[in-house]
Amino acid sequence: MRPESSRPIGVFDSGVGGLTVLKALMERLPNESTVYLGDTARVPYGTKSAEVVRRYSLRNAEFLLARDVKLLVVACNTASSVALPSLAERLGVPVVGVIEPGARAAAASSRSGRIGVIGTPGTIRSGAYRRALEAARPGVEVKAKSCPLFVPLAEEGWTEGEVPTLIARTYLEGLRHDRIDTLVLGCTHYPLLRAVISEAVGGQVALIDSAEATAVAVEEALRAQGLLASEGEATHQLSVTDVPDRFAEVGARFLGRPILHAEQVDMP
Amino acid sequence: MRPESSRPIGVFDSGVGGLTVLKALMERLPNESTVYLGDTARVPYGTKSAEVVRRYSLRNAEFLLARDVKLLVVACNTASSVALPSLAERLGVPVVGVIEPGARAAAASSRSGRIGVIGTPGTIRSGAYRRALEAARPGVEVKAKSCPLFVPLAEEGWTEGEVPTLIARTYLEGLRHDRIDTLVLGCTHYPLLRAVISEAVGGQVALIDSAEATAVAVEEALRAQGLLASEGEATHQLSVTDVPDRFAEVGARFLGRPILHAEQVDMP
Image: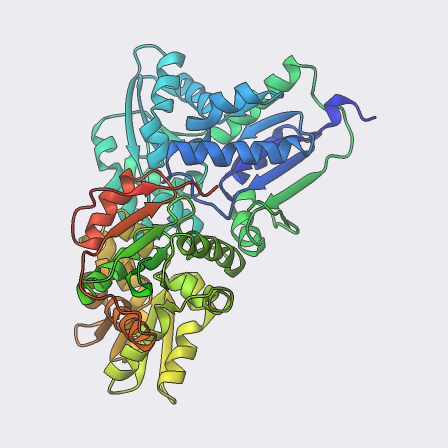
């Protein structure tokens, strides 16, 4: 029987966005094996209701548990913001989302205590970042704005030039005037739009991407439970619920390396 | 027992877009009752694979058949372009899609025989419009272009001003140079962007919206089978697979009237 610690880390997202989190995990924890599930047949989550996102999240978690994961990473801000408590309650493994790590990193980075958050309508509506930021740094002033077109822009690879620049300026004009010094990129798609977001909000604003902070939180959770993998051959499996062609093509931009194989799994 | 002809017409779409078709049906056939299903828990279809869209379409059709519909309208271009043959084979009622009626209307409208088609990636990739146009008018020259951001723009209500104008110009620049005289709006969301599309492609180009042509095709199909409803009280039911709030809000723009009630149905 293989030791507990050699079991893989499970990671799910609505699609390709969570690959930015997977990338950070693979860099920080090179000994860890991973199983990734992208729910590409139902993407996006960010414009759907909390009820539906919770239902999909539970199904994704069950799929990964069946693959014997030792810890679950919810690598989707929308799912983290509405489904994390119910997943943590139901599952027998530790669950790490992207909201708290990102909020803690932003709270630590800000000097003025005026922090902006951008995300999908579902994430912003949930108020999860506001609560996490207020818990991490009482008295913080939070300015939140949903940017629904950023996900399709990133998915289409339309990340620079006139159109994304104009859309970013339109969404972020208000935040620019709010004199924030830190902005949380509260959606795993947004790091691809980093350049236009930075230009729109002002180059002096620090942009916080949850991926790196989440990898740190995963390391802490594994260490706390004595579940860090020892040296050895790490394996990485990618699964999707729609046909994998487009995932492989778009996902390579998110993962920062070519995707040679992704398995299509049957989740009606 | 109620007569066959008093049974409702079933209409499905991935979300709100098909309400433009429902509106045309209600105007042309005021005696007909309708049952509409918007698959808002899985929207959009246009960026998903043919395999997944066929699976969802079959499930939607089965839901509507259980509501005893006498005819099924596939009010979604992506579903019509990839799922119509398999639905027509399996179901025991006539099935009408939006592609053929739109293509016939465009073929009849064009003088030069140079016709443009815009739609989702799924619709354009399928080649269904090209085939339907070539069947309706041999020798026609078809220029096709997918416009993936038009659906989120219409869903967000971002239908005029600088951003949609710039996106439309970027997508449609090529078609402008192709000297088409007719453009098929091959997605039920696109009529909401009619003004910016017309400006981008050139005001002399005739824009063809399939909704009206589809209503005519439904009337013909019902008449051919002796299934036209006689005068009486028509009822209209709206169903969605996600919570109905957003559907009611966004859908009113598509239906051209307030949506007082939409029922949420359980389709996991």
